[in-house]
Length: 220
Image (cartoon, rainbow, N blue to C red; front, top):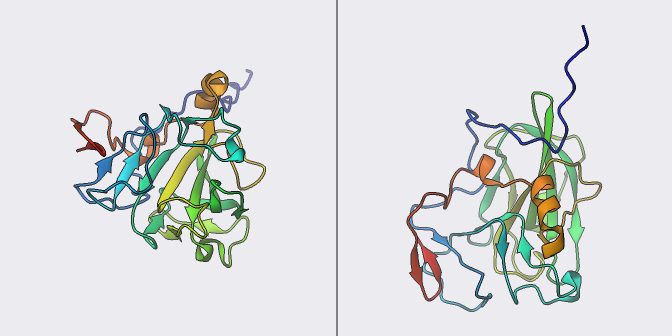
């Protein structure tokens, strides 16, 4: 009898029933941002903690040469917090890649972990980290569910952004410590297959939540 075919990396992920650890421990009053109207780094925040949405078109937000003026659909989830906020491994895994993406508007210090679910492998990129987050790291190094694996970086080390984590899943192994965190409209469909919704492991965050519109974004 022939063996059943191995799943394709691009098959939909089934992760129901896993008890994932929060990547950033958010308080109950975190904000949910709306960047469809643009990005003001000097806006007044209602909380130092917040969530930036997946598959959101962010017009006017990515203006540095890195993005070529055309990449503006966000394919990760942003988790904002104070500089130095701990970042936890959502599940057991290993360090896959780490490095420093130095361009203005890029990730700065970056860590990619690899996780195994049956026959499926899943990679998680953690961007905008502190320099200390990759000190002493080596590829293949084990990480455990709930372990502090990194910290939020400041603007001088995180690509020039207000402190937050860019968290992105990938069903295709990154060759380096980098993934396209925003894509152009014509690449959106393929990107959503390669980079599934991080809420698969982060939890709902804003799905099925009642959101209140404010001048600064959306508030739970």
